[in-house]
Length: 262
Image (cartoon, rainbow, N blue to C red; front, side, top):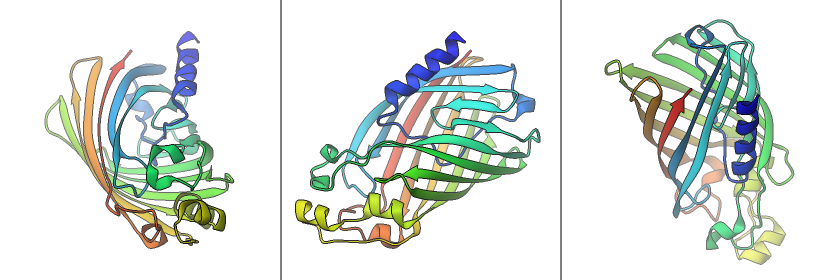
């Protein structure tokens, strides 16, 4: 119980700027060594200041992960949820995730557009693994944006190869679709924002906002410690790419994360 309370406090401390991953990535129940599995660590990221920014920032966040054999999970990447499947090849369930805030003060190019607050998103996920090396992933999230009525649907695939018992590499591809409410909050410019920022009014439609490819290297240092380093590149598409404050349509993210498993 004390460990769980500590994890909840970590979430509260970093939720203002943190964001959970598009896809849920869980260890199948059969491979969990304990009934309750915990890990703690930290991550450093080199990321765009906002979606479509040509400026980057360095951010550091605490990492935490708790996964129970009964299907429950609580994680900085996966969010808070439950996997109903007991099949190692199939994962499906419900979760609560976070969409990070976009602060106007983060970049001069956002001046006049206002803030978009951190959003708590209820949603669902479905993953299918052909074998331990190849899997398909999907997720649905609702509740982001200025009025908290943004909807996102993500589809993706991942391939993993073990180089030896301590090292493995992964490659992934994914696409994100969003409704018009989400698009307006993160890429649109209404009349008030136009007057304050100088950008022309812009009303984006629903559609695919971006396609992303990524690669990572995972090093199991010993029984407890592990290190993961990777990078991804996105391609903004559709109306999202036409936004007047999108200055880089192919943003790059680089990260490195270390964790200790109890």
